[in-house]
Length: 410
Ligand code: ASP
Ligand code: MG
Image 1: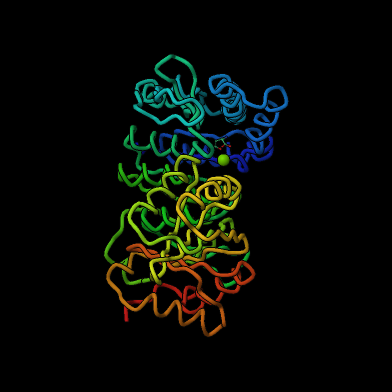
Image 2 (image 1 turned 90 degrees about the horizontal axis):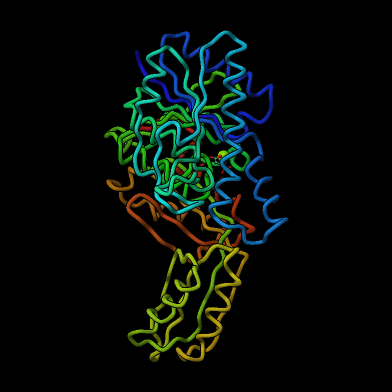
């Protein structure tokens, strides 16, 4: 019998009606003759609400107690689904992460899965039961419950699929797959049949919040193929998998915008060894996630240094940088929050040239000015004025013909 792991996110289990829809889906999968392991998130906004509740009694709750609290959300979900399945006449049993054999490290609220002992799940599957496991949690070495960080149920599902050597790992969510661009912004956006792990990772880090990045890294490491699909109807989703050769025929797989960035320019820094090290050491100490970095051509011993940071870290950045300006001998700093980062992603870029040129030309034809550029093997990102972000997405989507189906390499 094939083993299916089916994970349902918070919006798919938001209320009793949703739970019944999920129960039906799970029941049908079992009726088709498969062994089913279900992983659930907390219902709707439960986790957010629990966090808010804790903050009302203590602005800095203890991490162990936080895990005690947050892990309850998933427990509600699994018990309710088991009851719904029982009402349909199915045999089903719910389990917490620890009961399911999931062991984590000891970093409360951001724990990593260390190992899984699948014996108890397997024994129940062998008895013909549907097994429903709490996502986002496991047992720390101290025998306390630990959670995996926001969105961690995806990682639970992938880890279970790897440990059980599952035949399928399906991630049900409120979108019906992975698109070439955000369909709310680009009307011609198209659902992809498949996407490579690396492309998904780039898109996830760019703000396409379909899957938790860590779950994709995990899936890549253990070769678990994922299917992203909706629980609201029966349309096929998008497969996230190992890169295969024909994927390279499509040079650009998707376009994404990150509108939560800010740009910092440090003016007239002396061009000598150690200045960049001093600056970025201070930013690292302030826990700022620096992304793109550009240093311009040196002029009479001075240079401008520009970098981007997440917009909600701009205050931390400002205190770190302002305190250093004098020490490094810089003339001043400019903080700019009106920017957006637009990126194109595709594994085919490894084997095709001229993509950057095509991107810049398309933008320039629409009078969109490029302020910063960075590239990786499978991604090109530019910083532009935030007011042009949506237009840039549409322009690039069209320029790379992402609205058309799989186009062979020209
Ligand atoms: N309930 C947790 C969260 O909201 C875990 C998850 O949904 O994956 O982050
Ligand atoms: Mg979630």
